[in-house]
Image (tube, rainbow, N blue to C red; front, top):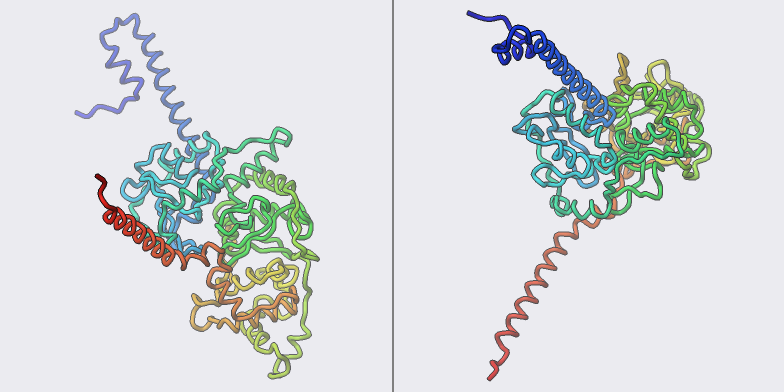
Amino acid sequence: MLTPPVSPGTFIGSVLFAPISASLRPVFLCLSALVATTGASFADDASDLVARGRYLATAADCAACHTAPHGGTPFAGGYGIDTPLGKIFSTNITPSKEDGIGNYSEEDFARAVREGVAKDGSHLYPAMPYTAYAKITDDDMKALYAYFMNGVKPDDHKPQKTELPFPFSIRTSMAVWNLLFLDKTRFQPNSAKSAEWNRGAYLADALEHCSTCHTPRNAFMAEDASQPLAGGSVGSWYAPNITSDKVAGIGGWSDDELIRYLKTGNVAGKAQAAGPMAEAVENSLQHLSDDDLKAIVTYLRDVPAIASGDKPSRAELGKPSSVVEASLRGLPGQMADENGYHVFSGSCAACHQVEGQGNDHYPSLFHNTATGEDRPDNLVSTILYGLHRTVGDHVAFMPAFGPDASFTDRLSDKDIADVSNYVLANYGNPAVKVTPADVVRIRDGGEKPLIVKLAPLAAPAAIAITVIVLALIIWLLSRRRSRPALG
């Protein structure tokens, strides 16, 4: 016969305390009720911890890199991150015991997140921004662990392995890199600043890891600490200066504009998020509370200004222009940049309009940071890779025209250079010129740092050193054999 389910407290009172006299039973029933209430309290606390961990994981933008595109399982890995070293594939961080982190202790988890060292001792590449996550507090690390172990569905997906060329394939070399460039200091509040400023600093520097993209890197691909948030290359894209400088940075933006950009990725007549920033807005920033977004803005406004010589601001350059379009329409061969016009007319004008003013769905091409920047990286990358950004129910979309585009939309490197020059000359920064070689450079991941340029010499150098060492050993052994015996 089946018995009705009982609560833990009732079970303890009726079974463990069954021999107790009836006069004491009320006392033990009260105790059992207390045990049941305490158990519920523990459950509530655990639920709160998981919920807090979910918010922290969102702020840290874990999903953007650890979820494969086009319907991949959340956090199951497989996203290919293009870096100057080669393509790095993200790992499975679901609680799968086969292919994920299901066997990680909280200590294992914290070490991987903060120091870039997996449970098996292998080193992660800093495409995983552990240099920023090193600042995460112990309490927040506990909440993150609780979320990934209890709030994420396990998935036995085995992502593609990262296979970088020699010498970057030697992961143990990251131990030396960490020794030189990893600061393991936890976030320390600044007592001279407000609580809002400190919250913004923690979000920006630790969880949102802004410096990972927006700080230039040195020859060894470590962040240049002398130029925090002054702008840096992110593969084919360029993360601009976000210091408080009024021209080169975001000092000329209003608080409302900055908050709107972080929350939506779109400030009409100023900037639109694309590439990695679009992913940050879509997966992370739009889901933060208004108070947290305001805190980030408060902090960024106080970041020391770093100028770059841009005059005027990249968001203020350009104006509507229809003169060139009208003069070229139907009159082939009239101007040197005719090909750029024809590409613009056939592929761009329907959305951005012939005067470049855009409409309710597509941004203007003037007063646009992508066309007003002193470098063409983001304009060319947007043409190459397109744009997709979902905020709430709104989807911002622009098709790609590069190698991954459909055959009918695909543009050659020369076409992309020509249309970029047309747009820059008529709507943006005319001082910037684009060549087909620039398009190739940007398409191939941007300018390579010194460490990557020297990489082809690593194998011959290793062979030469090995030969020299072997020759030295043979020479020493031969001398020992030829030395006459004493006595």
